[in-house]
Amino acid sequence: MRKTTKSLIAVTCATAAFAAAGCGTTSENTGQVQNQDPTKNCKGPNEKYTIGMSQANLAEPYRVRMDDDIRKAAAKVPQFDVQFSDAAKDNSKQISDVENFLTKQVDLLMISPNEAAPLTDVVKKAYNKGIPVVVLDRKVDGEAFTTYVGADNVQIGRQAGEYFKNALLPDGGKIVQIKGLSGSTPAAEREQGFKEGIQGSKIEIAATADGEWERSVGQQKMDALLKANPDIKAVYAQNDPMAEGAYLAAQAAGRNDLKFVGIDGLPIPSGGIKAVEDGRLQATNLYPTGGAEAVEAAKRLLIDCQPVPKTQTLETALVTKDNAAEVYARLNQG
View 1: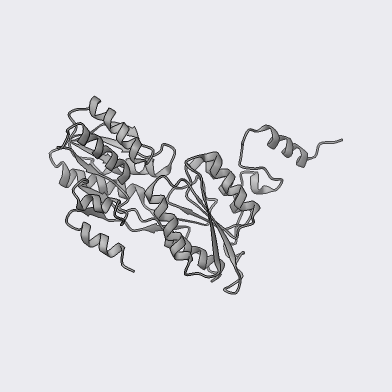
View 2: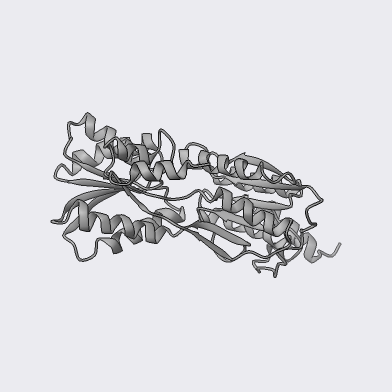
């Protein structure tokens, strides 16, 4: 039998490890990004819609809060049924989660990718099928999504760096950096911005470690960093849990002189704002979850039949002891 293009594609799929989150016989897997009418799935306010939300993990308090914010906002839209999945920091599981949502024929996909490159193809597949895709917090490569909702991570890193330069260590000194998961876009962008923020100062990043966004890993890495760099003055951690983990390691080592700055500023009792109020962190930088904005984007696309911006940049702010109580109260209004 003559091999058709379709059969060749099938053979390629069968032999290519977990290649690309599933093969197809249409242009959805050719690498081309298809033109999408983002309101194609809109049937107005009298229909029901199923939304799939693929979360990178639920080990980070930030991601638990993101899902909670989506649930809270979606509860106000009776037409929406949001189904959640937890990839547990596993790229292959998140690919499978998205494939499962495609099999269920969801009307819209929300995703906060574990890492950019491994999730790009399956997100592109959903987008090329005509499914609106709302990407939150962490990006994918390319333009195969309907809208990205998140704060400017370069700006947040720059904001943290400028705080070090102008307020925390105006005379300079050595510090260490605890990064988030390698391969996730915020880790690279927050480092880039921080280096821009400390330019022109005498601040030196003596060492960097990957804390994988988690408190326990941050604590473990900080213990090693302290032993190798006993002359540091401060810690820049790319999220508050890692900053708190670093603080615990410093306390255990008797280093009460160190200063700590994180990112996230969750307005919860165990979050970064309270850590600033309590004096464990000198500052945090707000990083909104985008949950409410993601639901609003879904409403505009599916119910109101309106397009949304390709990028929706959320506002950030520096939180210090001076404004922590006010920010905490404001973010918990309503």
